[in-house]
Image (cartoon, rainbow, N blue to C red; front, side, top):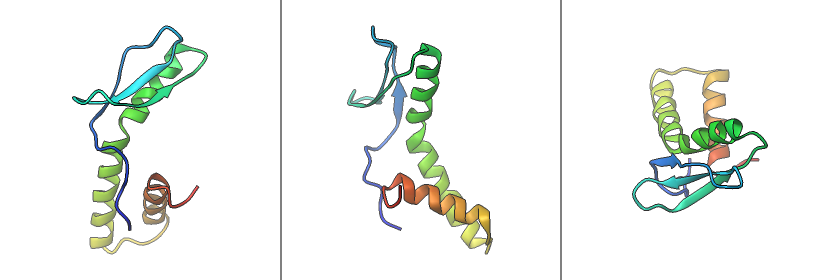
Amino acid sequence: MSDAKFTKGPWMAWQPRGDESVPVRTDGLGITIAYAHQGAITNARANAHLIAAAPELYDACCEALIMLKHLNVTGSLIDQVDSALAKARGETL
């Protein structure tokens, strides 16, 4: 498993802009990571919150994968977590 190359969290969804996009920024540094765009501002906010949760979700999946392997769990759950982490690292599409 390679190291993640993304900007460290935490990330936060900010207030919608005039074009109804919602910026996702790093906490403290104020670097914009992404903009969530959607026809309805409700969807853009929900998308932005999901994007903002990505660093914590990634870390939680890494910890879960370690625990699953420690418990000798095999099967589709461990494969799903491993696949999702590989996708987050850009190793798969």
